[in-house]
Length: 528
Image 1 (cartoon, helix red, strand yellow):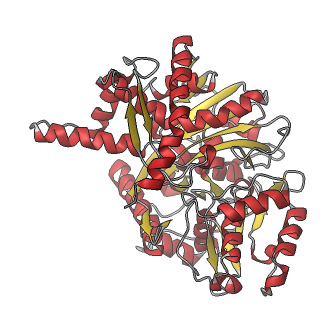
Image 2 (cartoon, one colour):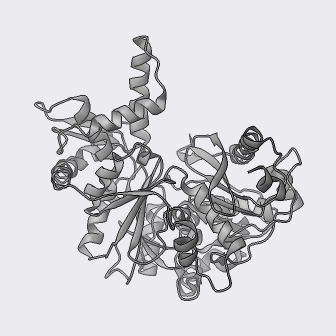
Image 3 (cartoon, helix red, strand yellow):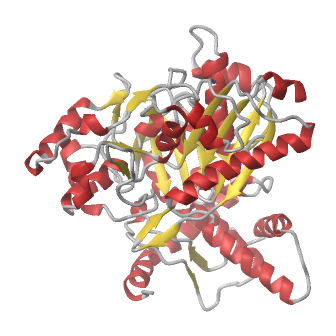
């Protein structure tokens, strides 16, 4: 490892996740060598879910500093040179800048459900599902709201695109992340030209000094030139001044694209489910869906292949809250346990529960869920008077709740006869071996594979995309690079759905769907 570090033969991947900014260093064989992280949380300010500019920059630097520290501890070397860098982040949201690259309004993240009017009108105008969290929905809502800053916009990007600009000075975006701003054309590998023209017509009477194409980033596919690390970018990432500039920086991607790379699910008929603070499925499509579904987004792989995506805003937050409560109870009883051990024991306990949930229903809705028609959410536990309120049933229902909205959307793909040969699970929910994996298999009626790298997540995925840019052979596709040079021989485990689990989850879902009106009433009546 020391030789690789000192020779500059390592590649850095950094991903801004919802609760953690993770940095991963890999060698030429794609094996993770060292890592660093920085914990953070979004803020709810004036009705907007956001992260401050200071928090974004500090977290970027803190994660890298933690990586440098880890390298020093592991091999005694100082990290000064890199063979490549990749930056990824949560997709979507709203980051408008003026001509001096000053942020015009606080970052409006993917978690906000405040653009219903814009999303509905754009969906009708485009004949294409435009989710509320997509950047163009946020932009058009700002137009409809007649927000003063809109006239001053000169650049619109995502969080990954902003971090990439810091490092390279280039206003570019990977095609997968771009497809979460507005629809892209898989044939031209660019934003859909017809929809760009349609949007310009929609706002033509506003008198803005820009057209949409003027303020959007350049779209790039995996492997294309996205710039190099500048001296200013190196100093921004590493204020200690050790990092040298000059290495290539691959096209910035969103967490969906890095999830596909990290799970080798970039070919048609493959897919993955990412489960952390949010949960989403990505299925690479063989053919277009027969109609527009508001529950299903159509984005792309890092090479531009169309992907059906079911995105849900809430996954593990409610589980985390309950586990924190159990830990607090343990401490009150004089018992101190490691949080990882608590998760492991509780997750395993869930497998002892009634497959149908024992008469309990849980909503993990920390935010709105457009898939089920909720603009806001209220975490809520409902149970029948004769429910079996055991720890096993409670934890099983918490795991069901983490996937219930995803399952609601995935049933539409099943009715569309979308072919799925292989689904990979990744993210923090899968760290306890065989538990969330088993529940997910029951949810989607398909085998689920978890690799030994499942915990590495998007930081490793963007590092792989950087490695592809640096090490690929002439004419070598990303699909072949991942299959033959990254994942060949990698340890993995696959679980097929058990009939008992499938039937139990289906019975639970019937109760869940029947309780959606109660969730809507809780939103209406329970205000802070």
